[in-house]
Length: 263
Image (tube, rainbow, N blue to C red; front, side):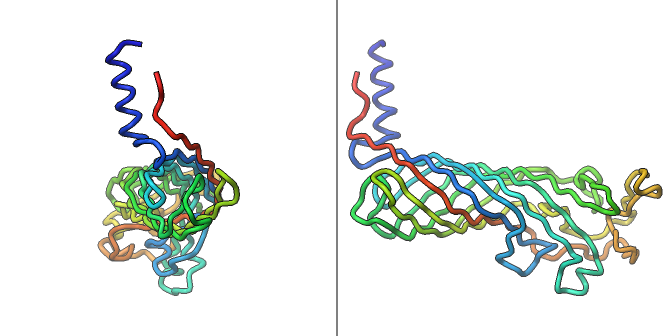
């Protein structure tokens, strides 16, 4: 290995890993449930509606601070027909979507802890970060499933990805020399109003699906209620960003090292 490569590798090691004892690499996996707050579930802040799981790699900068890359998958859904609100039941919309999220998150431990060291065996913590999420809302009417984004049910296009802002709280427990157990609840503000395909007003011209064997006359995807709401009437609520959340329990394993790589 050339001298420049040695120096470059050493610098990367010490910048990313830090000097020696203070830093560790942590891998984790988790599973739990996902839910959402938006136009079809506007008020219930904790209503899980599908499974969730994920994984991460994290660098513990010291016993209090850590930064990591996280991947989370979840399924969310909502049904007006199940709402306690009579006006939502009349609207009769529904959706489901998978979520694929990648984010960078910073943790802060309230106590001096990490699973490879620290003086405490547990700590509450909080986290925040920035990320992105992929989604694709679908609805089911009269036995047929529709990918709603392609129909432009409100007469406008939207992307199937959005920035997201994760934040939340949790608890970590050390259950072995390098093994940890954690639980957490994390919300995400998505920079889109269309996780559920609902966000604005009924279109001037209703969007009717193509005829099929299940639905020879098609389905009015803009207004499946059959109430014939006029164009321009508010279809969603006035909150411009949907929110989703994950509640997880997981395991972590910490790799510790007392020095940078030697050459």
